[in-house]
Image (cartoon, rainbow, N blue to C red):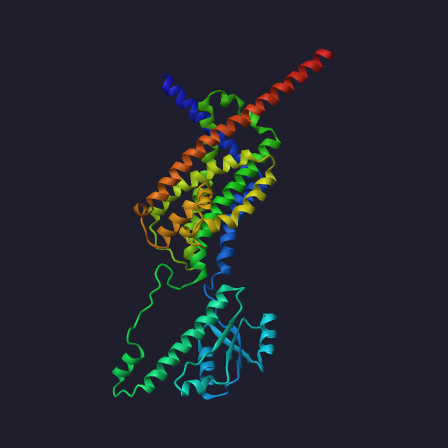
Length: 411
């Protein structure tokens, strides 16, 4: 009977904590913004900005000192490509650099006066490409367009000079070793499909931590921890407190996570080929990990505003350390160790492999196991830090009671 009685008491205490935390979440406007409004609207804004996927019609200015048919053909082909738009012809490089410095144009094609002459002499002809490197997507469009056009024109010139008798001979001479480019996992080659999946996982972590931090800061400011003193008399009480709070956050983010990882990518046409069962099983430890991590962080900062400053500061470094924008093997060992402290590192890697590459849970077992281990560690830390917080509240209550008794005795 004692086992059933203890189980009933544990369920009752955890339900009380869950209900109390749920009421505080609904009443706190700041927590509602981070738990509901930001996860709903921020991914839509981010996805809408990158919905074009690729950069098209990048403005380029041309300096043509050759003024020949071959140079005009080169310019026309570049202008006909989807990535480059010939904005204007400049009289000299000074005028072209002026347009580039004012960002009217993003690149310069300089064709020297001996361009066609060198071709006719069977000597290499050079086209100089000047790119604005401040925007990598624009640089890629300007440089690759010039490269592809020169390769195509070079093949045509080689074919004409070959003296072949059949079309097949001309094709073999132009391309003796052909290749076919196949884009896997990101068929559009777009920036949105590349970066949005990592951002969605990072949004889950950051908003969870921010919301939990604001809620814990409000509890300290209003001294709500004293309400938990009767439940926390034993170590089992800590499990009930942490479990009840975690259940509240998990119920909210089970819905928000489904919206973020299932609805948003399909709404904007991003790559999403993972099975929902694998995603659900993978997100389970990730959400619990983020929740306990947020509870630990919330107890380490004194004021609720400090959580916002801390998480905003680490958002961009966490995106880089996840290995999505820079190869994981090229990240120094020290920084890789720092990245292992955050759930988003393993969450992003596993989610991208499942959702973008079509992997299964078996393909991300290392990340899956790391998340469970990390979750266990942060759960234990959350119990310890909450026990310390409640101990502080108990000490404060005793001190306050002693002051009241002393004041009553004096009267």
